[in-house]
Every structure is written in structure tokens, then in C-alpha cells.
Length: 94
Ligand SMILES: [Zn+2]
Image 1 (spheres, helix red, strand yellow):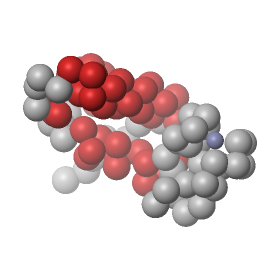
Image 2 (cartoon, helix red, strand yellow; image 1 turned 90 degrees about the vertical axis):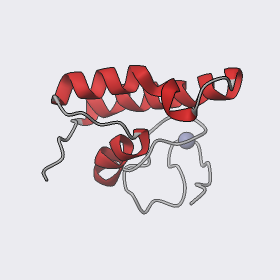
Image 3 (cartoon, helix red, strand yellow; image 1 turned 180 degrees about the vertical axis):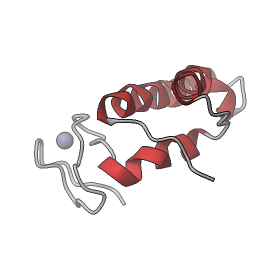
Image 4 (cartoon, protein in one colour; image 1 turned 30 degrees about the horizontal axis):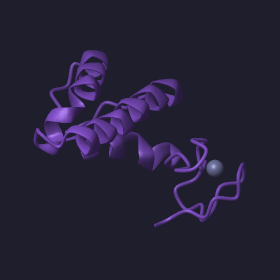
């Protein structure tokens, strides 16, 4: 099955929703992890008309393309293989 892809800008918005979902989960811890990602699902499924229910699957759709963002400064690592951030020097945890 073909998986809908996001462009760089859409990916950035989606990764913010993804991070927010984890924050919410950490702060409240009243719902199962997945239920904290409703904004991410709304955004992604609204864009793609896909019915994705796995937050990690959504992230993999574009992390494989662009590489993840730096945990320290939020800038993209640019490549999936990058071992540190060129912007702030943060060492990436792989
Ligand atoms: Zn950085």
C-alpha cells in the first residue's frame, strides 16, 4: 500500500503535534499514550485522507525522508544518519 507523504512544511507541523502529544501524555498520564495524539491524527488524516492510528507510523512516513529534528534546538538533522546537530552541536541519541 502506498503511504501518503508530507512535504517539509507539513512534516514540521506534524512533528510539533507529535511532540505536544508526548508532553500531554507526560503531564496528564490519564489516557493511553495514543489518545494524546488526536491533533496529530486530525492533521495528518485531514491532509492525506488516510486513516492512520499509529503516531509512530506517521512520524516514520517523513522522518525517513528528512531525518528527525534536533531534540535540543528543534532544527532538522537533515539526514537520517547525522550523528550530531550542525546548528547547536547537540549529540544525537540514536
Ligand atoms: Zn540542535
